[in-house]
Length: 300
Image (cartoon, rainbow, N blue to C red; front, side, top):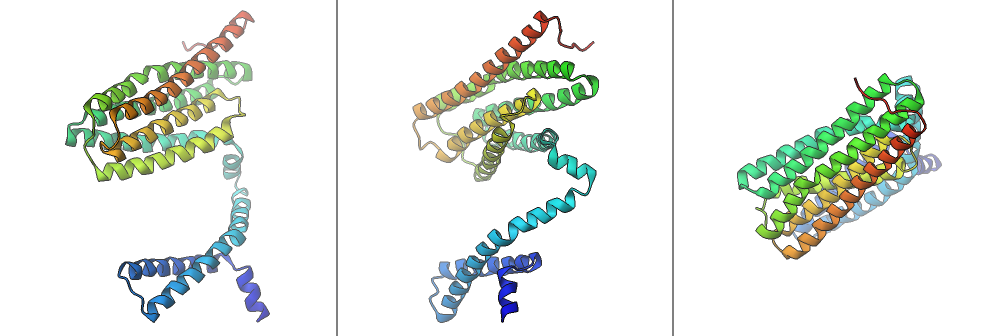
């Protein structure tokens, strides 16, 4: 009995995986029975088992998950490449930014498809805006990688990153034209064409963008790497715009045009503020470097 109690108190990972699979099956069965309005003794037994299995699954998540994550991390760190990936936040940022670029491209294609199907200026504007953000993100990644290889000296590399920060700020300001066009369109044209598929895609994209922006904003705020800060600021803007887009798609004309205009103006204001800050901060840093006799590197 003591061995059995000890086993359930601190179960192995494989047992937790099996238990969680059974728990999901019981929960699914409970949902089906509940929808069918079943109150037979057998159905009540399924409900009870689902509740107990869910409670134990929550316990094992707290008890076993930290240990599993720790053990997995220790095994992964035995590989030099994986260890560098886990320790180097900048490297992880650029790798995930590459994946984010692909995700953004897929979302642009979805908006273009909706624009063609529904003949909607709103979807065309959103596609143009997300395409511009994707291009800016790709430009930052490529420029940062090129600067890393081209300028081995830290001081020269720092100024090259300031130039990237400056270019990103200017590009962000220029991209506001597409967002402003979307806001004007939804304000005066009213409702967008309903699309359940795109609404689900927008919700998933928004969840991803908000989670990524919060995570990277917290992790990157103390970093002096301007390229990483560019990606962080782009994530913040993309998250705000995706929230605005989700509100538009889900409201389906249920909100007044003035509300859409006010919310859109707020998103524009934040994006413009970030663009102005990035441009001004980088210009000041490059100006101080020139006054000090250290010119920023320029591509030939």
